[in-house]
Image 1 (tube, rainbow, N blue to C red):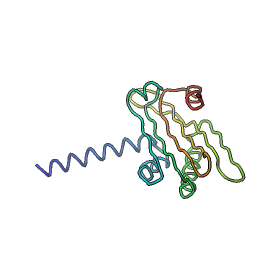
Image 2 (image 1 turned 90 degrees about the vertical axis):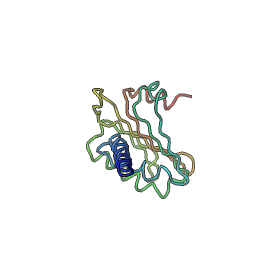
Image 3 (image 1 turned 135 degrees about the vertical axis):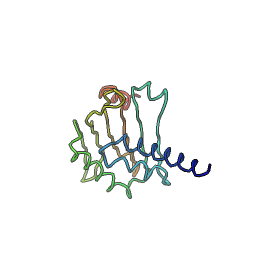
Image 4 (image 1 turned 180 degrees about the vertical axis):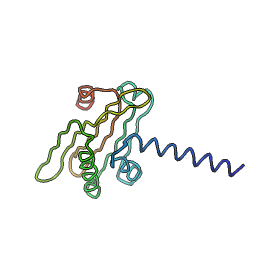
Length: 152
């Protein structure tokens, strides 16, 4: 009985892990969410249910770093890897005095459950050492994403 429970638990955990990894398939950035999501000074947000549907999204994950300094080199490497992977359809990068300030990447579309989904990867430094990394998948257009991000 206990052995069956352990097998079932292992299968469920592997399934959950594969869903997390699939969301950022082909991208190194995916491991940042699992590696840093529970670190002190990092806030992870994952949306689900009706709120996702209301914004035409299937996946929304973000990491907010109170002090991005120790994480910045790895984040930048992962963003560069996304560009090198040839999965980027559109990009905008802002550097100030040699420091990466913001990145907007529209990635190649993926097919899931018969739906064509758009993917976006965003990074932005805020005041001081604050920074946010966001991964989004859904049917939302670039205009809908910009309206959502800059709505006041």
